[in-house]
Length: 182
Image 1 (cartoon, one colour):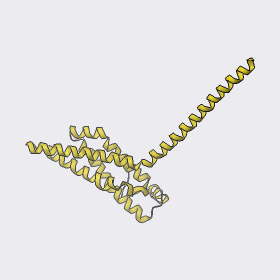
Image 2 (spheres, one colour; image 1 turned 60 degrees about the vertical axis):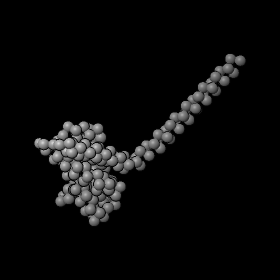
Image 3 (cartoon, helix red, strand yellow; image 1 turned 180 degrees about the vertical axis):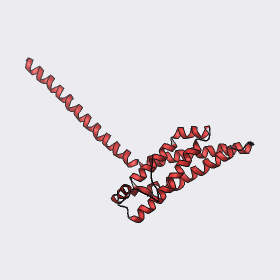
Image 4 (cartoon, one colour; image 1 turned 45 degrees about the vertical axis):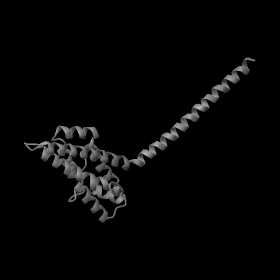
């Protein structure tokens, strides 16, 4: 779903980044950040698939799909990289790390009460990270949501005014009908 490479970026993408107003240095920085994020997202997907409990969390929050779409949105709107900093620098690395450790510990043949407690705490933290990623994604698209809200408001006002006009016309028709009969 996403294609970016530090070693090779299509001329089309470079042109897209330049049209977005990025300098060559900013393009290089963006590419480095995306080159770090892409394998993290792929790793997160693999880690979620190693355990039924983790798959359940992934399905509940749709985390992999949200991460992939967030990544694509950053590519499409490179000037907003700073707005995605929590996602790129906190949530992705933390989620990847905790998922790997969870799967490693869960893979141990022998487990004791403490092991199960740590796994439960880890699962709770993973769930919080999934929710945080969703929240960050929604926040990243807040302007789109606000624009849609504004459009809905205007459309509803227009519909109400049209309904009022139609209502007024029908009242006038009744009044005129009464005059015609008299």
